[in-house]
Image 1 (cartoon, helix red, strand yellow):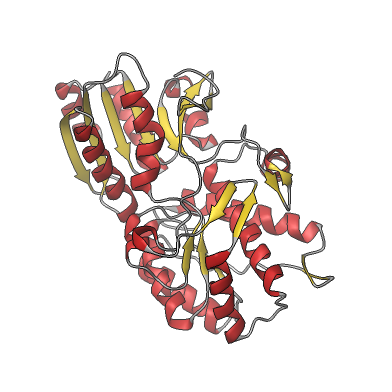
Image 2: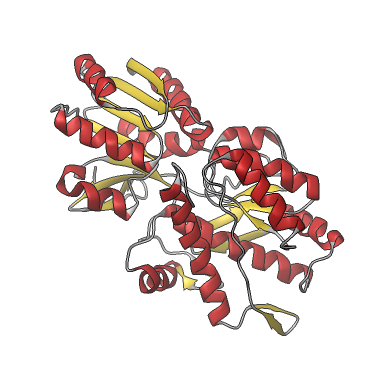
Length: 368
């Protein structure tokens, strides 16, 4: 909630708070005919994995929480996951996308979002490279040096090369740098596509530097942040036609046991925050819905015993539930262990001031 990733932290908090406010409006989580209201207890990771680990330990040992909802960012999740394993308490994340999390096969950590190496490629990059005419022939890739962003940049480079696209620049840079030198280097390379895998603040700074440098390639592709209201509102008309990836859009229609359907969730969110939710705000609301389904299946009433916390982990491994976010089914083996790979990755583009689905071709709502 503080530090360099504060924007994403508050996005995550809004999503979780939206779930809690709705479930409590309904009287709480119903278990065997009795309803139990939800209390969310927050710890500030300060955008630092070690601080996040300390916060998680305090929540478990002092606050006596029944389960953990994951922090914002992959790096902090990697810091917190060992704590969840140590105390055998389920940690469900709705805002961490690094494949490193799932490759380590933490026993008690689960993820609603698919890993960025699937997500970015299946979404915006695949549409740009294979569904747009004329197809791009060159790309300049920038990634910030953190677990999530670097994985996205690395996978983008491999995918571009596999599709015969010339990678004319590849830069892994510290977070929060002055992007003007990178943008000038890209302008000299003259790529068709300029791709940045980072967090929203870095994307905003890249866009502003590109405007100042008069760098205008055929396509910008930014991941994560394009679908966040603050991104396209702050950039205004300068965000027009920029591409991004997402695994959810408010126009989608899924049945939901809490909100009725996706539109019901969007309406509730707008009443609370007067803005359109992005995919992270929806995925972090879905955490609570998935957890509710698992608790109801167990018939577990608060406070959970140590044995019930372990059982909750086992139920989460088997559960399949559709929420306002879409389908959730966690993998139980392999490189995506405990990650939800069941959602569809979307290509998004800002058109007429808002993000719309422009790919994959079989489900797009507008042409790119």
